Length: 127
Image 1 (tube, rainbow, N blue to C red):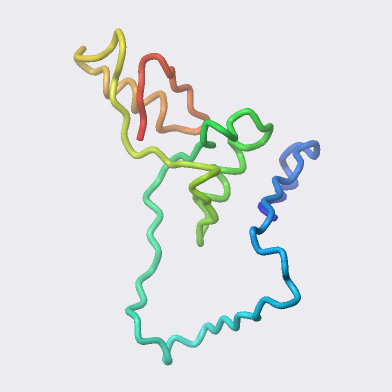
Image 2 (image 1 turned 60 degrees about the vertical axis):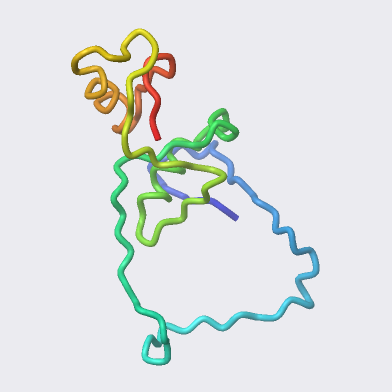
């Protein structure tokens, strides 16, 4: 269940349920997860969240509440940001009529890499 309940948000936002591919839950082995790092052979490094804004992917953009869900869950620690649902653009380039103009890329960054984004799709491409 992918759902984050924030009491300050509207209550009419419904959870997004993603079903597991694995249907036989009774036979699947249980995984034991330990916080003890003394037994681990791999190098432990902290997660660093460098993103400023996260938006829903094109397929989920029309679902009410997804912009808020992506922003909240992708920027939390530890992040819960499925690539199929959300993406977090780092930079933007001017396209169309703005392409090649002075300051156009900065304009796109100012419009798109903020929350809530006001990104003109016909003028800016963010990735």
